[in-house]
Length: 195
Image 1: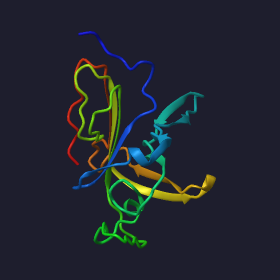
Image 2 (image 1 turned 180 degrees about the horizontal axis):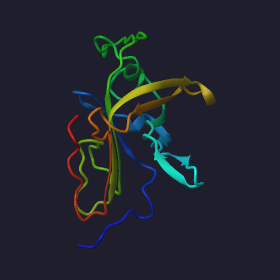
Image 3 (image 1 turned 180 degrees about the vertical axis):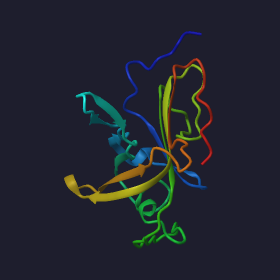
Image 4 (image 1 turned 30 degrees about the vertical axis):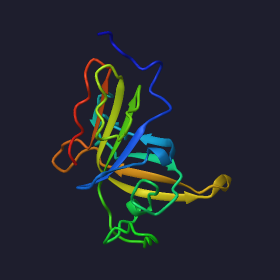
């Protein structure tokens, strides 16, 4: 079988799935215009001067990471048509019309999955889809993320919102909170990690 690569680059279409810890994936792709910021933190160093004039590189801990989507919410539901209930989780999720979302101090943890592939599947979900052999793909899995910002706007006379998810690069025990994967098409991506 010939090696398969994306035509030029992964572009234009991406599947975006958001999963509350212990919940089901919700597709955000179809309300998202763009991903305006992907901040993968920094692994900085600091030079410590020595008395002989030399320097020692002191490694500083990796900084927090974040991703920001710009989308077009059309409801306050949890079905992928909005995002306000991810920012203000309710004691009991409101999915019955009319929906009311009050400001809360609650915070839920989320997994965010982004999947780019040559051919989108017929029933796409970012987390459950594993592209078949012969399909080039790239996937980012983010764990234990919090929605830290939800900024609605009426620029250009259309309701939009910027949603930011932020996470620490590692959990308390030092295990990762992000995985980046790819395949050139000779093998499938492994199944998405349970969250």
